[in-house]
Structures are given as structure tokens and as C-alpha cells.
Image (cartoon, rainbow, N blue to C red; front, side, top):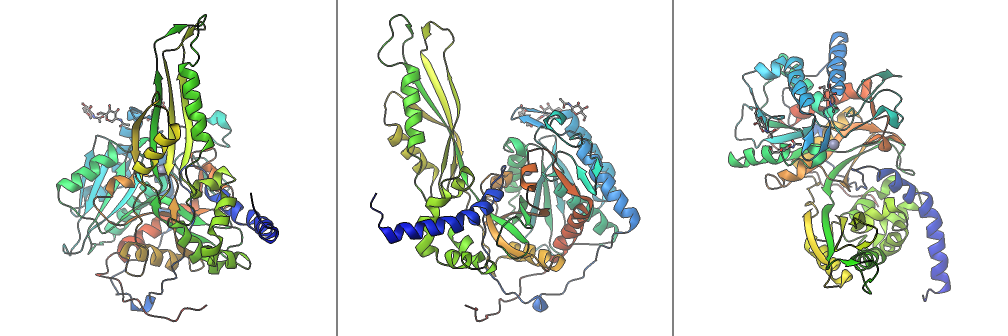
Amino acid sequence: MTDSGPKLKLFKWLKIIISSFIVTVLLLLTIASIRTITLDVNVGLQLAQWEKTKHISLVIDHRQREELIENFKEAVRIPTVSFSETESNTTALLHFDRLLRTAFPTVFSSSLVQHENVANYSHLFWVQGSQPDLEPYLLLAHIDVVPASESDGWEAPPFSAKEINGFIYGRGTIDNKSPVMSILQALEYLLIKGYTPRRGFYIGLGHDEEVSGYNGSVNIARILKQRGVQLLFVLDEGLAILDGVISGLEGPAALIGISEKGSATVKLSVNMVPSHSSMPPRETTVGILAAAVKRLEDNPMPRLFGHGPERGIFENLAHKFGFPLKFIMSNLWLFSPLLGRILERKPETNAFVRTTTAVTMFNAGVKVNVIPSLAEAYVNLRIHSAQSLQEVLDLIHSTVGDQRVKIELVDGFDPLPVSSADEKSFGFQIIKKTVVDMFPAVTVAPGICIGNTDSRHFKDLTNDIYRFAPVWFKPGDAQRFHGINERISKKNYEELVVFYSDFIQNCDIQKLPEPHSSVHEL
Ligand SMILES: *[C@@H]1O[C@H](CO)[C@@H](O)[C@H](O)[C@H]1NC(C)=O
Ligand SMILES: *[C@@H]1O[C@H](CO)[C@@H](O)[C@H](O)[C@H]1NC(C)=O
Ligand SMILES: *[C@@H]1O[C@H](CO)[C@@H](O)[C@H](O)[C@H]1NC(C)=O
Ligand SMILES: [Zn+2]
């Protein structure tokens, strides 16, 4: 290394600042499957210029409050668990189907709504608009959950929907039954009040998102494609409102996911004639494979921090931070290589810097005195936005660099396209307006998901996929996702119902107001 003195000093200085701020920020943001970093585009669409449409405000009375909470708890109590791509609790999925029909009778009987089951347990609703020339959108959510066991340390049994201090506990309270139930609850109330949308929309509820959505979302997308549907945008789960999670940031931030990392599962295998352990060859299948795996671990994928949308993310949120973070984030043209090096030191933040490589399975051997003829390993990679699946495969081949190791792609896809987030972006601006109208103190900014959702199956039907629900996340809440003590407050659940009610109605404008040009502050 040839670091000069002053440069080294600067590095140390930065290291201290950054590790106490950004690293903790990202650390908190990167737990579980769906985490983020963000950018604020500072769009100025004057609210006064928004087209006025008939607006029904949802004033939730005492009776409705009890009703909507009871419906939601019922949903949480049904263990709609996806165990694997071939195994799910179909009994529970059928119960869930029945619950939807009893909880939302108006949705299921309205002449404006067409409902169909897809792949037996998923649901597709079409809510007809009065103005068929307006391009429809899709609200997406999923009814399955990951497994949960009380013995893992839950404060309340995971399928009890028990209330503790104003929170409802249970698997699926966030991921993802709160959107499922609140979208339909909002529609139920709107229809009861005689609402007819101008812009038609779809609601898609998948039953196997947690195991990739190959039956649910894939078939919903196929049906829409067959019918020639083009979607203005898709709104799915993903990011949330972070409150006190990003240290150094003033106020809460609603992060709207505009992209997701790609993914690849690669199988490495070595095949040789079996031999007896008393006369071992110089190299065995296990030794050859182990060396290949070690080379992959020793040579991580290139550092790409600053080459994907994450650069804009930092730069655009910079104004919400104090000095010196504001300065560092505003000058990533200078600091991104350095920042990348610091971020790569921790697994949680390394995920934003590069395509990650994880060896997840390694199998060989059946008998203590037989050298196995076959050794295989599986490697799971999450692909950075600035790289393609093919580039990643090429790099694996060159890093392994051994003809005896067979390399096969089991499953994989490119990083998702980056959805628009500017002042002409209809979906983004409607989400932003709905959030800001409800929560004026919240900063709305785009973000990136490092995990995946089943909304990717809709990428041929739309240019814009957004991943967000107005669920409030405080420090520590991210670990509840797919972890223990998943919960949502009753107040927050009610906010979701109001949010979707407002959101649906906000989509009734024909087009966005013209952006106003303003002189940007420095
Ligand atoms: C998906 O569909 C296949 C074929 O019908 C079935 O065997 C499998 O169990 C289904 N999996 C889920 C999670 O729905
Ligand atoms: C499946 O769901 C039903 C209720 O819908 C429940 O009684 C049953 O225990 C569940 N099975 C498993 C294996 O979780
Ligand atoms: C759907 O249900 C039918 C019978 O009701 C069954 O034959 C089929 O395998 C089911 N499909 C899936 C994907 O579970
Ligand atoms: Zn989910």
C-alpha cells in the first residue's frame, strides 16, 4: 500500500465520522429481506394545482374501528404459511379465502368489482373506473407468511393476534397482511359510501410470495398480459416510514423502493470416479470444490458503490443531514470510493456496495472410507444494480478457473429496472402526495430494496414498480420482519386503511399538475 500521510489521516477522520453515522444507518436499514438506502428528489409539485376530484374522507367511527381491527386480527390468526415452493398450508389458504368474502361483502358483491381466484388461492380484483381511457394501476400484496414458532421467543403466540400495549402481535402483521386487509377494507368502506373510481385499478393478492410467487403473482401477471393490460404503475410492499432509524436525519422518512437487487443461485459440482480411502488420489472431489469455493470467498465481486442508483440516493438526502454528513453525501464524486471501502467492512452495508456471494450448501460423501465421486455446493448471489446476471456468471467462471468444476445457473434474474421518481412520475407523486397529506412531517424519498418481492413478475406490464406501505418503523423494528415479535400498532393499521382510501381517490386525477420551476437553494 502506498497511502501518503495526509490521505491516511483523512481516511481515519472519515472513518470515525462515517462509522458512527452512516454505518449504523445502513446497518439498521439492511436487516431481513427488504432494506434500503435513499434519495430525495425534492420535487416541487404545488399541491394547490392538483386537480380537484370528488373526495370521500374516511372518518372512522367507533364501530368501524372495532370492525376493522377484528377483521385484521382474524387474518393474522389464520396460519397461511409457505413452507417451500411446493408446500404451503392450503387449509389455511382456503380459510383465508372465506375470511375475505365474509369480511368484505360489499367488495365481493359490488357490480363495479370483478373477482377471480388465480392458482386456486391467489386473488385478482378488477375495480372498474368510470373513465376507461385512464390507464389502470395495480395494488399488490401477499397473503402467505414465513413460518413462526412460539418457542423462538415470541411475547405472544405468533398466530394469536394478541394485543399488547396497543400493538397487535403476530406473523404477517407487517409482512404482509396489513396491506392485504387494509386495501380491501378501504375499498369496502368506499364502496359502501357510493364511491365510483374514475381510474380503474387492480388488486392482486398472491399466496406464495415468500417462496418466489411462481404460482400466484406469475399467474396474475400472465392473466393481465393475456388480456392486453398495461399498468400505469404497481404499488407493492417493500419499504416503510423510518422514524429515528436513520441517525443524523431530521424527522421521519418515507422510503419508496424504486429498484431491487438481482439474484442468482449457482451450483458448483465436481465429478470423479469413486476411489477407496486407502489409496486416495492427490486431489479429491471435495478438495477441488473446497478450493473453488475458497477462491470465490477470497475474491469478492467488484466494489460498485457509486455506480448504481445509490449514489443519487445519498446525494439527494444530503440536505436533511447536519454537517459533516451533509458535506460528504453531497460530494460523492469525491467520497464514493472511500465510502465504498468503509461500507464493505460490515456485512449489512457491504450489501449496498457489491454483488454479494454466499455459499449456502456444501454436500459430499456417504461413507467414512469412500472418497466421494460427487461434491456439490450452492452459491447464492445478490446482484448489484450496476451489474448483470451474465457479468456475474462470467466472473464466477474466471474466478473458479478450473475446468473440473462444473458451474450451472439454477435460478437467477437481473437487478430490477429503476422506476421513475421525478415530477412526471405519476405513481411516485401520488404516493408522495398521499403520504405528505397524512403526515406533513415526513420526508418522502426513493430507496432500493436489497431483498426481492414478487412485484418483479410484473416488470413487463409496467415501467414503474414502487415498493412501499406507510408502516412506521422505529429502531429495532426491522428485525421483527421474518423474525420474532412482528407487530403493528392498532393506530398504524387504521392509518393504513385511511392511506389506501386516500391513495385510490388521489389516483382519480387525469394527470399530474405541471411541475413548477423553482430556484434550488444551495
Ligand atoms: C404451485 O403449483 C404447483 C403445481 O400445481 C404445486 O405442486 C405447488 O404445490 C404449488 N405451490 C404453492 C406454494 O402454491
Ligand atoms: C394449517 O392451517 C390450519 C388452520 O387453517 C391449522 O389448523 C393447521 O394447524 C395448519 N397446519 C400447519 C402444518 O401449520
Ligand atoms: C387447484 O385445485 C384443483 C382441484 O380443486 C387441483 O386439482 C389443483 O391441483 C389445484 N392447483 C393448485 C396449484 O394447487
Ligand atoms: Zn412480504
